[in-house]
Image 1 (cartoon, helix red, strand yellow):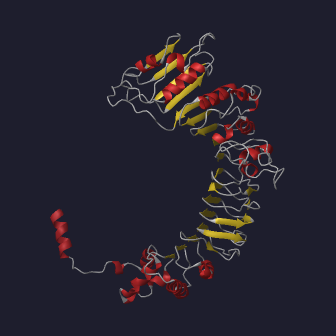
Image 2 (cartoon, rainbow, N blue to C red):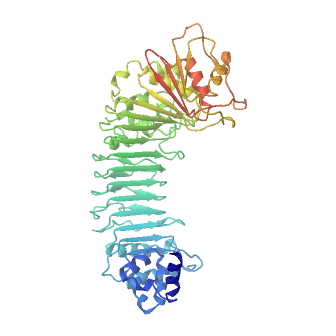
Image 3 (spheres, helix red, strand yellow):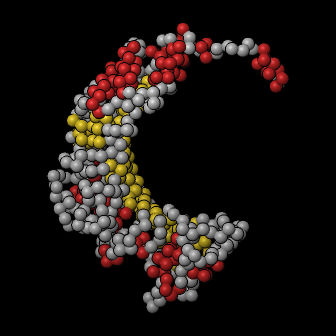
Length: 515
């Protein structure tokens, strides 16, 4: 069979142009994947190719050769000629403007090209520059066909983000831009993404999109935008940039908010109203992350809304910085919450005082009965993490503990699988060496810690703890999770958690009345 196929190939005449045998529509589609200047160059291949580029439905208008377009006038003339000579009867599917060599003084050309692309019924428009902030004319875009719009490296001001004249626009993505508009408004957008962009340091930008289904505000700078009501919102992710002076507490230190100054208490130009949380109250999935000194979320908790649809919640250390009231407040205002994840970076040990934990005994009754568990993810199991576990125990909430980084490597000479092991620590003489001795052949380690006498305290000083430089024994390669069963999170459990946290990424702590 191989010889016969090779014979047929050899019998075929060489030099046959199979590409030109394709229909015009297929060739025009293929040309759309090339940069526009290279697509135009195909016109010299043959007579049939002379006008194919004029009917392309996808235009990639980019400066892919900086040496070729070293003079801005040459690029401007090419772009203008391309848009004027293309077949206007063929509607555009997608237009991309990228990396133009023109300077700010010639930015008017960009506005003309954008309007021309929209008049060609473009369904997707990408305006992305990496060399400088191109400035649009600030006038609203008008299109009855535009479905997706992407901005990158552009200065957006005046009314350019008013999409009242784009009735079918559904996706808006803004990345690496300067946003100085008073309002981002639309009656049709369903998905909004703002990444690595800067809002105004003056009046807050209002986001008025009642049709929004998903929202992502990722690493934005300056003042947080004001979110208006979004009743259809299903999923939201909000994380402000960690540097800058806006929405920061200037009196609480580099990693804290004092909770007392005018900024922390929301005594600003929107006093009496929520900035972010009010617009997020309809979400079913919510991620709220911030540097501890960022006070925008804590400020909003003064007017905390009820998250009536919220089932999955992800928070980081801002909600437990200084004291746990922010975490408790959100839990109390989430009546149908089912799962929560608390992500903790390595931080100071005095992040949360012990005295604040035991002042929440009467709060657990207000927490969702649907809450199955809280997943605590941390880099290091330290005193701060142990305090949070004690808080969750006080609130009568089940939780699991997971390491996100691994500082200790297991011994290279792992032993094969062994029998499952239940280690019952009902005696006062169990220490780090005893635990390590259980790890050599175990495929599952379950520590059952019974009630302990108040006269004995399990501490690092009295029992010892393994340090990163200490040699470790062989540990079963099949042992990945350690489950600790206990009635309360006391000093013994904290010690064991910190010790095992240096060996395993997954530590499950299950609370039970009768372990």
